[in-house]
Length: 163
Image 1: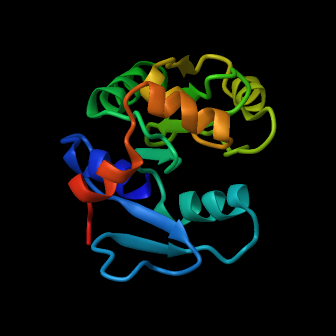
Image 2: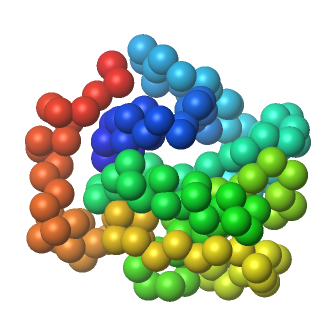
């Protein structure tokens, strides 16, 4: 799924730079890598935002098997109007992606009930509900739903890869 999401991001013309937050850079990783120092996702993302300064930013999770370039474009377009666009999970409680225009002040609050927290902090944010952004794989039920919608885990590794 990681390879698939990176492939979609790479194929989306509006994406200028891809940076991975992880403890280690994967072998042959061709994009930017930001070391995850195990301080927690939100703290790591805040540190990245501070280091990058005033830039447009898309924060997206790598467990979105139905993601498409059109989904990314819709999220980015929504952020151009409000400064912040949020992609909730299919349950309407979590956040699978945030699009922030340069200068948008929103602290990442990923974790339980993150959607409500993000909306509390950015009440005028656009909420972008699309299947490709909403269906994340956290449980066997999620994977079954993704497969019923056409996701083929075996084919993904063969068709899209950054290595």
